[in-house]
Amino acid sequence: MAACFCCFRCCWDGTGFSSGHIPLKEIPTVKLDASLMGNDVVIVKNGRRICGTGAALSNAPIAQDKAYFEVKVQSTGVWGVGLASRRCNVNEVPLGENTESWVVRQDGAMYHDKQQKGKLPEVPQEGDVLGLTYDHVQLNFYLNGKPLPCPFTGMKGTLYPVFYVDEGAVMDVQFDKFYHHPPDGFDSIMIEQSLL
Image (tube, rainbow, N blue to C red; front, side):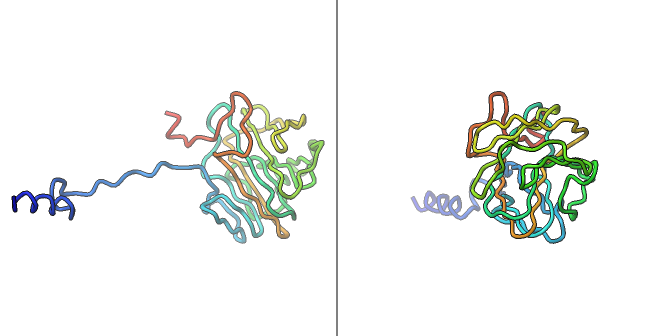
């Protein structure tokens, strides 16, 4: 009987049946990437909130055919959201001033390469959720779940979701557990390993 308790105690203390600890691998999640952000950007809430001044890219590119992500405008100011390559200057605000970013700005204007390419019919306000879909042909926008008929086209290369803030703007990004159901055929961005 004493031997049985000794075995139980060794197992309980971690010195019994298994001599080594097997760590569980954490499933990678898409979030804002602290290594791909501007010098004056602050990322909090486990990579889900951006504030300060500058831009940040996600830690994963959009590799699948149809992807969806969202941003909630927590506090107004100067902000933008869209797609960019890793060559995008994350310290340059506003984005859309070069060939490496395609963004919609706080006034609804859509910019790429210093040119306004369109304008959303409704301007996002504080508390609104802006959804974005990308299928490697078009970047489409949704305001509080409602489609806005003003697509962005002409994006090229390996692209990442990008977000920028200035003048007190605060945005919360959602790469999963969305506020609104993604449009049919679209889903959250997958880390490339999970595509294999």
